[in-house]
Length: 140
Image (tube, rainbow, N blue to C red; front, top):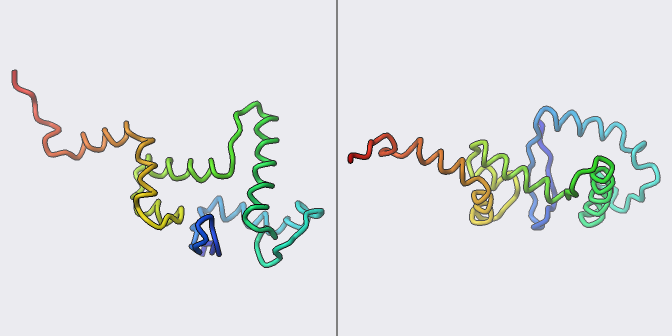
């Protein structure tokens, strides 16, 4: 079904995450190889996909990201940065704000509206395109 149930996210509220074709393929490869990838990794939460609680998983992912960014000469990005980027890219691409709210697991729409601040140029273009008086000429 290309969905993943996230039992408890940052807010402690469970939600369904939808996967693209690419994300589903990556997750399938991970599940097939996770024993090899994490052979010396202590699985304290065996019932979870990664075998770790939220804090431990975030710490491990951010350590790996720091190493990868340093090796590539890129500025540091965290796992939270990926989440924020996803929200911003979806809003900029025209995704409905309510859909972004559901995908990211926000309880209220007000929290999701922060992504609107990042794309003022695209918002201005949307208003110009949709406003009924956008094509009116100013008379001298």
